[in-house]
Image (tube, rainbow, N blue to C red; front, side, top):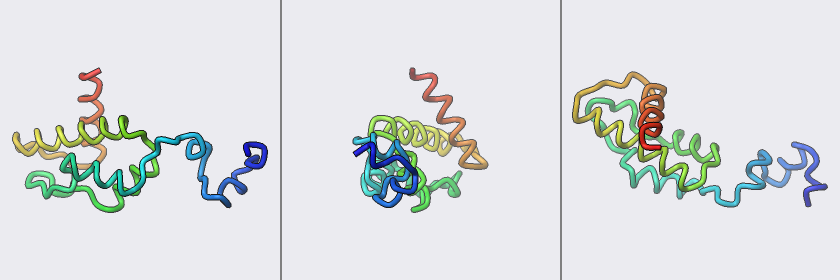
Length: 111
């Protein structure tokens, strides 16, 4: 089968966007990504940072990243923790980039 997948065009014809899609057998479905986001409260209506509430586009973004369940759980858990702490302390996070940065810092502390 690999010999037949010699170009990006032929991979696209059968629904594989990248080599990662071909080899990542643990890739979550969009529904699984959505369920995980719900589990971690990422669709919550935040009082302090309402603009950071997950939307359908966020599900598509995370789905396309091709994370395994363990990796995505770590990502969502750290974002949830940052958002809950911000809600408690009244800290405003201006953008998704700021949320990502704080989530990365939190992940680094827990390694």
